[in-house]
Image 1 (cartoon, helix red, strand yellow):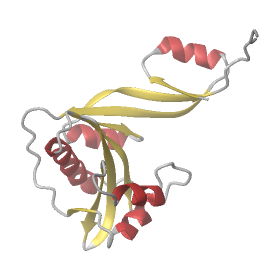
Image 2 (cartoon, helix red, strand yellow; image 1 turned 90 degrees about the vertical axis):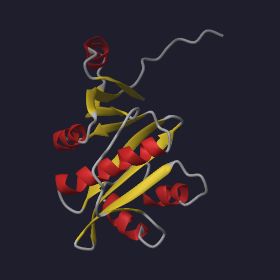
Image 3 (cartoon, one colour; image 1 turned 135 degrees about the vertical axis):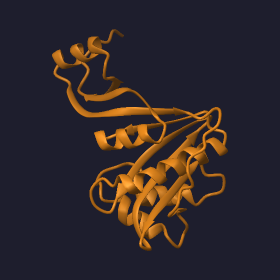
Image 4 (cartoon, helix red, strand yellow; image 1 turned 120 degrees about the vertical axis):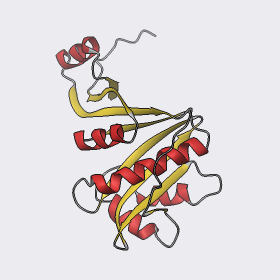
Length: 182
C-alpha cells in the first residue's frame, strides 16, 4: 500500500517508520498561482508535440522504466479530442533536447514530467516551464503544481515563478491485519 504525505509532517512520518514502512520517493512540490498577469518571455524553440514529432517525445520520455504514463498511454490520451494533456518539445539546433508533459484537472494543472536528452538541462527547462505556465493560464487553470524530483528542477521551477510549497514523501508498507467480526 502507498501513503503520501507532506514531508514536514513529522508525526505521521514517525508512525509509518516505526511500523516498518519504507520511504520510496521524496520530492519538492512547487506551485504557481496563475491569477493576475503572467508575462513570461517568449518560449523560443518550444513547440507542441504532433503526430509527426511524437516519436521524438517518446525517445526522451521513455528513458524512465516502469512509469504509468509511458509513451503508449500518453499517445492514446493526447491525440483524442478535448484532451487535458499538453506535450511540448524543446529544440536545440533542430533536435529535440527536452520534453515536458502536463495535464489539466478542473481548474488545476500538474506537470507530470520533464525529460532531457542527457542530464538536467536548465537552458531547455526554462522555456518549457514558461510556455507551460502561460498555456495553463490561457486554458483557465488557477494554479499549476510540479513534483520536482531534483533540486535543480525545483530551482528552475522557482526561477520561472513557482513557489516552493514543501516536500512530498511516499511511503510503502502493509497495514496490520484486522480481526473481522461476522
